[in-house]
Length: 421
Image 1 (cartoon, rainbow, N blue to C red):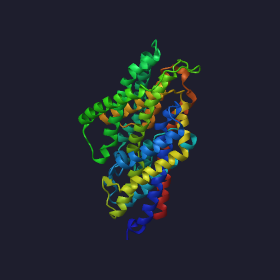
Image 2 (cartoon, rainbow, N blue to C red; image 1 turned 60 degrees about the horizontal axis):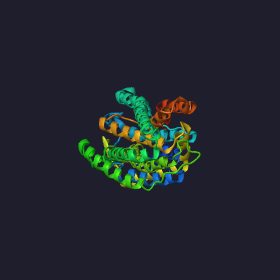
Image 3 (cartoon, one colour; image 1 turned 45 degrees about the horizontal axis):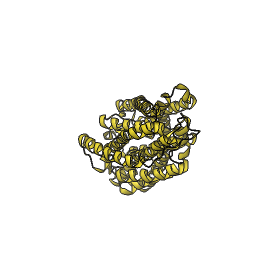
Image 4 (cartoon, rainbow, N blue to C red; image 1 turned 135 degrees about the horizontal axis):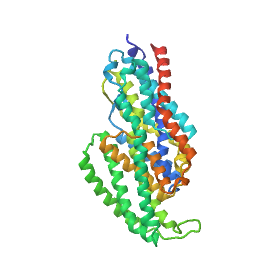
């Protein structure tokens, strides 16, 4: 009797526990990134951020989280190499989930925004090297993922810098900032509607089998942009100009206009994030279930049962509610001081970067993208506006993520092998 048949139920129970733990880590660390700018700029309270994220992250994970997922994330190992010893894949995926989740727990407790994708990738590389040898890893794929460390923040930082400079020039430096805001904000609202629809169509809905192609998505996104802009014009008519002593521009009304926009971007980023990053927790879990149920068959892609997506979505929500506030504080207030207009520029830049990456197939990390965008907005106000100590700590945590995931996965892999093998 094979090891898989003998311990099948235990493997599935362990996979569900570790998968939930990993989803918890995604919620505690990654979701907090998506919400950090909105909370840091005081466009929404932490309570409202959690409610928005709970609803939209869960819907993204459940509705668009993918019926079919790669059994091995990002094509790092060739599944063919595991045909002889299918139980190695089970040990490896259990080890990878536990290792990535443990690292995310450490990072979230410290308030470090790290990439959940890089955590799971590092863990899978670790198990592959330990269980199959270095030749089993597609180092080219790993190199491309590592390159996204530089590409994501530089691209989003540049876009955020440009966006915020344009807001400064067109609105805040105008003779009447409030009148200028009413004139130019519909243009930014159009950009929000466009970017958000593109993120949802290219990232969010392709998992459901709604792969519309880039051209169709582009057309729909432009239409959605105009629709959202029209809605924005109606909403901004209600915002009154008001002057406050504490407001350096003398127009808190201008910032309130951007505050309204931040709510749109927060909802959309949460949906796109839930649909995209739940796979980090669900992929390895689906792989274990698939191997156990087929009695040791290894396929390139595994069907994800609906309850697994609910488990993933639930884990994300629990993680955000219990530990999300620490990373929200780092992204929202630790790097640079944010106002609604600055937070808006950062979130929109991150969304645009995700769209560009989806269109060109660049692997990027939402975390790195958003942190880069916040940095770009800070730089637009000069180096003095940045907290370099916090930035140094974040950069260090990014560099440690892959090796930390790999080292933990090797440790857990041999533990499981010893226990069951």
